[in-house]
Amino acid sequence: MTTHEEPVDSVLETIGRTPLVRLQNGPEGVPIYAKLETFNPGASVKDRIGQYMLERMLERGDVPPSGTIIEPTAGNTGIGLAIAAEQLGLDAIFVVPERFSVEKQQLMAALGAEVINTPTEDGMDGAIARAHDLADELDDAAVPQQFSNPLNAEAHYETTAPEIYEALDGEVGAVVVGCGTAGTLMGIARYALEQDPDTHVVAVEPEGSVYGELFEEDREEAEYKIEGIGTHDTTTNELFDPDLIDDVLAIADRDAHAELKRLAREEGHLVASSAGAASVASKRVAQQIADGDVEAPHETVVTIFPDSSERYLSKGIYRSFEEWTS
Image (cartoon, rainbow, N blue to C red; front, side):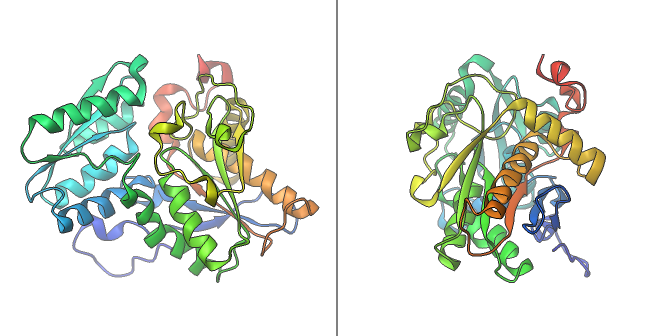
């Protein structure tokens, strides 16, 4: 839990130890707990990898002191990396597809980073290619590359997962986590399965994403509004390990949107669409455990609420579904 009772010397020391809060809308007898990553200084789960990856990269010499990190990102990773880069004496450049949140891009710039946009139609593949091209042009630059760097998952294995298990005295039955780069899910899943190999692990993606194809499930690729999770090309998500996963649940934009509005109205959680999707999926898994359709070592479900709805207000996140998706 967040227990910063003593003064600290750097904002980096406030990353992690976020609250784990029980949700109020699950099935009777199977509590669902959400890790509220908005309590990090950059208001998202990506603060964890920003600090962890850059500290390890500096230790290993992957980037020199006073060097430059260049990252393709939809925004939250950029914010987390920007916070850590400034505190660790590094410069930061972020390559962001145009369609992503204006608020995130403004925050990255406010934190001292340079933001370069790439065309929406080029997707994250275009942003990744541009980042590597830029890094090749500089002598002191490195690309942390959250989509393939094992340090991404390691950050959650070392921090997020132990915090969850400490808070619940190890009684975790199922882990249900949104899957974008897959770092958060993979790190938590690996830790969870080491504690109990019968832990039920579920990946969450939007309808239109294709992670399910790795499990020979039918997926119809399509555009989706949910941000931060999902993929159109699993070959770019190198961290995803199907052997750690029991199931992949695809959540519709409409269901995620309705849930994020309910979470705000009824439970006081100002969270974004990826949290809405995670909450919907968590309730489904909790119901499966309650009905006896899924066996889990404990009758508890844990999920992650990655970031805040305030990052998406300009996109009408709390308006009608039609306005949000237009």
